[in-house]
Image (cartoon, rainbow over all chains, first blue to last red; front, side):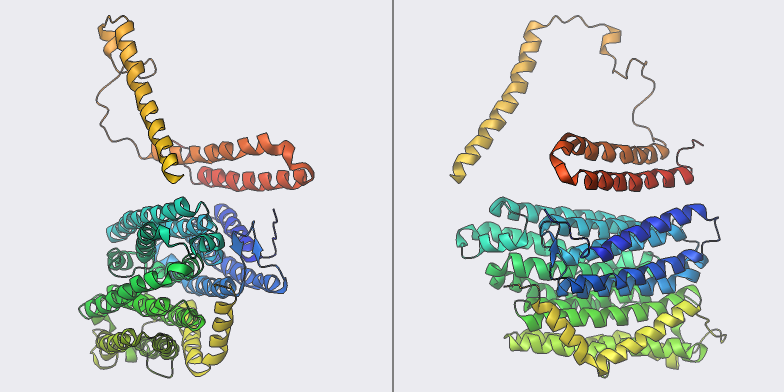
Length: 480
Length: 122
């Protein structure tokens, strides 16, 4: 029994932060809670600093090997904490304007981030599931935070019912694995299943359940049905978080669980993920073409992006495959948060969330319009942006491992996606606005747009340090 | 080897179901049966039952139930902790501190409910 708290320092700081926010929230009078934003923001930065000691110790596993703090999980911890910090930065005036419960929002956001951090660090089925549930249950509540708004309630109920079913499916798959191997630790599961093909039919069933369960959580088609409604109904700030956090968390868990626990049957699950990738890309992109609500369009676009990421998961048996997924997740997180910051500004402090509301945004608020254009350019995958480099690495990882057809499907889909992104860009620069007053985004939201613009360009122009980081992190967990 | 354990499970199921059937049948055969109106009423802890059971319960009951969980979880976790405490040996101080950390977190949950006026009936 060893409890190495240095390795869990970021998680512990985040837990303490959530409790501190709760206590301070109780002592503040309603309407005077602006200070919570900065306490949360500072706390997240402290948690990020808490990652440093973990990189300095030789040990990499704690809690009897259930949780590891290797390069892989540190990469994801940095990603999750950055997402939480950016969301917090954009949150203050939005929460006030929509009359959302301030303290509860931050507590739930921090708890969800904590759950995702455990998902990325777990080497054990139990902790993976606990992390997943912590992230999911808090997400259900976040979706329904606009209590007076029926659409928000609908989003929460749909997300909850679908998510609960997905958890049950996943848990059933996990129980089959446990029944077969008598173990919950991924390393040992991998050893037991390695070279023993007598279990194959049951392993196959378990794999299908696990892929379906995780597919629900990251909203891959055909398990995506909750996504558009949940994205449209949830408060825009929460949608921004959904589009990045839980998906990246599920992706981290998938990368670790499948490559360690099921390395022996990788020929089978890569096929499943290839199918999911193709269906997600085509379904997401083709449906997004017909949307008139921008949040709904972004929901389908995120399904398509999960498809691109799953191309990388299909070749996750190699280090470049895992590294390309991690790099694309980084680029995806940055450009998606940026795009949602603009959507949030136009929705809450401007005309609304329909495509028509973006008419003439280029004259009403040039920074927002140019920012959104850059993020869309990145999402399509045009240089010099992070999205281009991310897609390039996914593409080359797929081609190197003999999935040329999958790479071609990806290229075709990137071309299709131009259609709906271009529609909004055209509105912004050519459309005639109903009003000509400028759209004033709060300072925090503007800061998020500016930061994400810089990082998106940086990931495109100076990609190699980030890719080297992802490659080193992908090699570290000793997958094989 | 593997099939042996499934036979065990089957035996267990047969015995478990058989026990219920046999004991209920035995009860029917042996026990005297003299029903009257009071005996046939549903049992509500001694109160006379009122109205239909299929009504909308006040939402506050659910919040009370959730608050009850705070104590429930506390008890579930503290019981094995107390039983095993003797075995912790040199770690005893650490284990005590850990439990109190847990209790403080749960107490914060209760404090939250209190401040949000969950415990007030309106």
